[in-house]
Length: 346
Length: 246
Image (cartoon, rainbow over all chains, first blue to last red; front, side, top):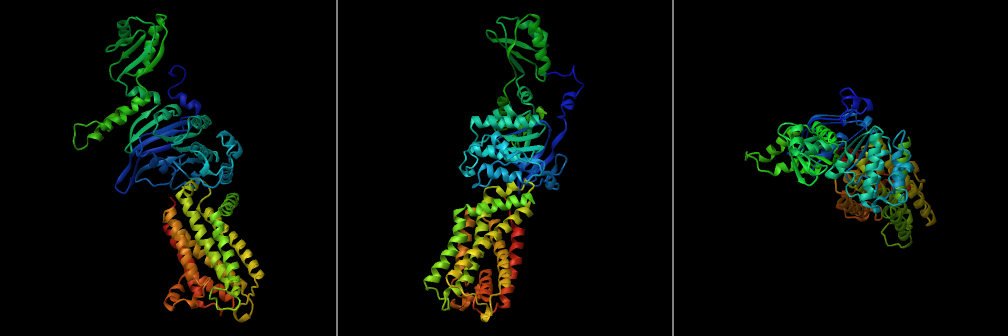
């Protein structure tokens, strides 16, 4: 994963053109009356990237996405989508963005073919609706009224409608909610294909597995606040207890390995051939993995089942679960717990 | 132009593939015209009820399409999030509204054609005031004003109420205005106080204008034109100010 020897710093992004910011959310606050839905949220999403807003229900994901889509004003902070203001430049933006609402949004009595052809007519240079019907697997159901489609078919039609205007940025609110496993694969493949075409895809999900599978970067939010941000891998290792699990031949010299990795490290053979390497807190994982691989290679030992830290799921539960812990301050225990963890991640 | 044409086609398709809407906009007016022209049970005050019924039922048809059908359809589109979703497309509100207005006018044109044809078959004799001939131009102006007024009322309700509540309210309003609006029963048959209330409502103003231009009644009173015009301005403005898209 280390490109430092082949590319100048930041070169990976520059070469593939993915460093261009497409969506920018800076210190955004959204209030509904007295309720604070989004609290000083900041993040960016780039072209050629899938960014997942991950959080439990009521975390502020939809509020954030709908503000970016221009549906609601923000109380404070700034939003930029393709360099435009979603509220003021709405007319210019709608030609360049694709939107999938959390639910509904489609004429219930019209079939997929009718709706896709109708939406295609709104845009100057649309995708071919018939191609899209094939891509989302709705060609056979082309005349079935929307209300009689299955939940998965409705979501796939909604995704096709988001794509029909050849957008540069895609906002997908819970794109796989209610979609069967086969449909999920269709949705994921389409999302990945759009990303590879250079689109910026911003999606929301409350399902970790979905974020882990489809997102290049994940922003974890809860109660309107950013708790953690990073690639699924970074997030999983970042909140780890500082351990790396791997397998190799049984009976290696664990003490020598620990010494080779660095001070404060310990290595334990949990089961024959299955090891756990504990690191002092704050140690970056990639160089350790490199050291580990090097040490094993010198001894002609194979390296298998490498897992740095934990799964994203464990990380997510650790991050969001922290708010359940009673904190030392009775006035604001939950906030303290969350924010403390959130800061560490950044 | 292409987005507007596509949207208009979709709006018309939805009207003509929706059973309830067809029943409301064509079924009820046609059945009423055929039935009450044949069975003389209504106190129309004319020897040939069809002469009273054609203008009255034209007014009813305008109300059914521009208020009731438009309101119910728009209310459900709002409830299903369709209007919200369209807000994220380049269609834009002006073109959406234009498509809806044109679709209503297209349906009304069809209704008027069918009702006038049936009227002639039933022996309608368009008289005009004092038998001087029907004032078709003025009748069309009245129908357009009525469409704008009722369309405004329909959208005002659709933009404020939940879809199912709106459905009930708009249907109830349709029945009340049908009875009080001089469409089937002449205003003269209502108690004076009720007729006075009716005369400031758009239903009576429209039907009186059509009776005065296409029927055998006396010429249209200035008050009817004023009432119709005021509703045609006030209702759409109120709708525009209060309409909630989600």
